[in-house]
Structure formats: C-alpha cells, structure tokens
Image 1 (tube, rainbow over the protein chains, first blue to last red):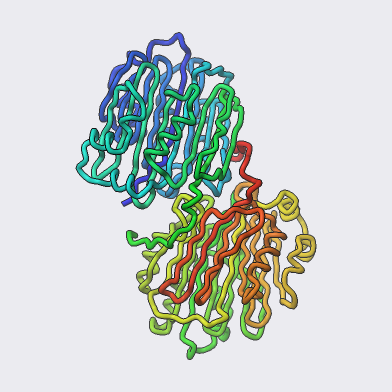
Image 2: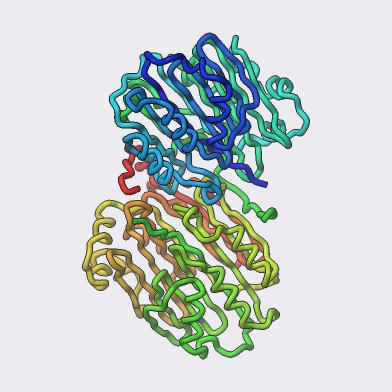
Length: 313
Length: 313
C-alpha cells in the first residue's frame, strides 16, 4: 500500500483591513479542508495563529493569512478556489501555490498544469518550475500583484526522501504514542517553548504542529517503504540561523536526499551541507515579492544501490 | 505541445529450433506494432537482422529474437502480450521488459506496475526497480527461466536528458534532411560500415536504425523544450570499448544528464565520465541470466539554474 507524502501548499494573504480570519466559525474551516478531501483532527491556538492538524497535513490561520498544506491524493486547488471565492478580488493581496514533484504522479487527481488553469479562472498568475523536469523540482504559481513581504516573513521548508534505517524503524513501529515518538526521535528538543499538537496515524505516519506567538513549525512523516517522505516547515528561529535549524532537522531524520525551499523578502539560501552534494540550485526574485531559493541535495555515500524487487503489485 | 521521449523496451528470445522469425509476413509485424499504437515507416535488412523504423521508435528482428522499443504514449505491453501469445509457452526462452521513469507519467495509459500484472498473466516473472523511486530510475521485469546469454550478448543503452544549446538548435531546425542532420551532428561518423535508415519527423524529432551483420545501433531524438530526450542503443563495438562508444555518443549530444544501462553475461559497467558526477549506480546479477548495470550521471557545471516560466498550459 502506497501513500503519497509529497505535498501541495497554498498561502493566501488578504487585505489587512478585513475582519480577523480567526473569527470565522469552525464550520468554515471544516468546509474549506473538505474541498481538498481532508478533515480537521485537532487544533491549537497562540495569540496570533490557529493551527489545525488535518487528516492529511496542516492548516494555519493568522489574522489575514492562511497556509494550507495537504498531501496524499488531496485536491488542494479546490480548497484554494473555495477560499478565494469568499472574498472580493481586490482583497486578495497574495496567492502562492506550490507543488513538489510526486512519487506517483499518475495517481494524482490533477497535475500542476491543470491546477494552474483552474486558479487562472479566479486570479491572474504566473507558473514556474524550479529545477529540471526530469529531476527533483518544485512547481510555483503566484498571483501577479505587487506585494511587499514584511522583513521577518521568511519560511524554510525541508523536504526529505528516505531516512536512515534506525529512524525509519522508529517511525514504522506500530502503537507508539506521539509523546514517545517525539522524545525518541529528538523532535521534542528541536524548538523550545512551543505549544505542540501531534498525531500518530494507523498503521504509521506522524504529523505535528507547533505554535509560539506568530511562529510555527510543522512536520509530516510518511515512513512508507515504497516512497518514504518527511516534510518540515517553519518560520521560527530562521531569522538568522536557518543553517542551524536545517542541521538539526537533518540530524533527526538523516535522509538520503532532501530539498530546501526558502522564501525571503530579498535573500537567497545558499548553504553547503556536510556529506551532501548539491544536485540543483535554483533561485529567483519573483513577481510575488519574494526571493525564492530551491535546492536539492543528495548524500554522497548513498549512491551505490542494489536493485529493489517490487513484490507488491 | 509535449511528446514523451522516454521509452519502453521489450526483448523476447525464442527456442532456437523454431522457424526463422524473419520468414513471418510483413502483416505480422504491422499487426504487432499496431498493438502498441505504432506504425512501420521503413525497413532495412542485414544477413542476420531486419530493422524496422517505427512512427514511435524501432523494432529489430533476428532469427529467434526481437527487440521492440517504443516511446510516446504507446502501449508496448499489448504488443508483448500479442507476440508471446503466438508461441507455445515452452518456446519462450527469455522475456525482458524495461521502462524508464517518464517526464509525464500521468499522461501514460498504464504504469509499470499495471504492465507487470498484465505480463504475469502470460508468463511468470519478477519486477525490479534500479535506482531510487524519487530519482532517475529504471524498471526491469524479466521472466523466471534459466537462460545463458552468449558471450557476445552485450547491450549498451545511453539515455540522455537535455542537450547543449547548439545541438538542440540543430535538432529543432525545421525542414532539415536526414542526411544533413547526420553529417552536421556527427552521427554519420559514429560507426563505420553500417546500413542506415533514418527519418526526420514533423515539426522535429529524429530516428535512426543502423545494421551491420548481427550488430545494430539505434538513435531516437525528441528535441522538445519541455522534456528533451535522446536515446542511443547498440550491441556494436562495445565488446571491449564501451567507454569509447559512450564518450563519442556524449560528444555528439552533450547532455546535461544521462543514464547508462548495460546488459552483459557477467560483468558490470563501472565507468567514470569526465565532467560528470555519478548520482546512482545500481547493479545486479539477475535471474534472467544477465548482469545489469544502471547508472545515472549529471553534469557538474549545470547545477545552477533559473526558474523556468511555464507558458504553455
């Protein structure tokens, strides 16, 4: 049985003068994520943000901004259309839609190109590919509207492929409690002072949302033999030390290869990682106001492999 | 407009005592390739082999063996089933089915897993993946039957991704004659003494079959901006000098990255290529009697990229 860990993500920012999004009734958010075929499992709040843990990833709601991340066979683009259609078009300040290349694209209900055609019915935007089409790559679509991110508006995503055997075994263990998993994996000590909401799926799989004021981090682990994937995303502690955050995340999961995706008002993320070679490095100052850096790394020692027999057909 | 260059390939060997396959009527081969949704464009013969150039790749027919290669959205597995069903099951000595990961897997009528389920209805086989699922990789399915390849039974495939700009421009030029393309590209001087059959497609795209006795080589160029791909395959001149053949092919096409696939009775293909880094190296002595080596290389200088705007949606 295969589960697609690779995620789709949408970030939408509205005019600052509108009502606080967190005043919307719970049913609004339920309806929103249902458009993507996801469900709300639980919720935590800080003064500035509400974080929903979903059956397939996460939703973060700030005063005038949402970040919705979904994996599996979800139809995130439908949720995006639903959200956008609730507001006047001139109140939509920024829309950024991302989609990572998938393990099994043929199992997805739509591809990126189809999603963009749908989004273009509601807003005017541009589509890009970061990285070669035949390699790891990131698709990014953004609305065409001048936007100036705040100085602190920086996001780091680390998308990891395959894990060290010991780490994989830990996450594949059945009937573990989330607290146990957090402690044994080292996730517990990644950041200090965050309110944590996490969940262990059946038979395995792990999701976590963490909140502290306006800072968040989120982790999703899909520890399947056929298509192991872990995503990490945060705006916390990366104002100056993104390389330290990256190093600690890599130490916890020990992947065979990984991407970094860095959104910053004007700087790129150029970082050398010990024991890893860089396969792709793509950066651009985009029309959506962000400087985006995408890089793919692979572990130097994990190039030689055996053929893998595929028994589950 | 996109065209999937990545190929599927089937190689079937029959008992030696059967009638010479080349005695089959033309209509048999027409029917065979039609099963895959391809058409025969032309044909050349040597004493030992007939080579058909197809609308989508190539078919080689020896006394008791065929090699059928198809690209695009072809259904090669149907042709394989059709061919196998024409013979007694104990006359099928060897079946090897290969499929390279595609640019757009969601546009394919079937995936490898589905193809294997179909083939398993006719023969008993095993399926393997060479390389990580999220990287360049090769799927190989083979029949479970002891088979001893002849000492000279060695095949080298070189699958190339993206080409140097000058090379790409040459192959994208419209209204070029095939002879002109052969001369300007350097293909003309790749091997000596081969009978050549080649074809330039509209608006572009190039296919070549070459024959000399039992030796063949074949080239297929899909020079599309969105998914540029070139395949080269031969059993010629690689008995001792496969690295020289590889070097000359790379000099002609100057790709950004490429795979080598090497079938040999018992040896692996371990070769360092100047200016290229090895991303994957996978080898195995398989139950089908061949030692198979799969490797992926990428050009060291082509790691830094710009985001690519996707305008054709």
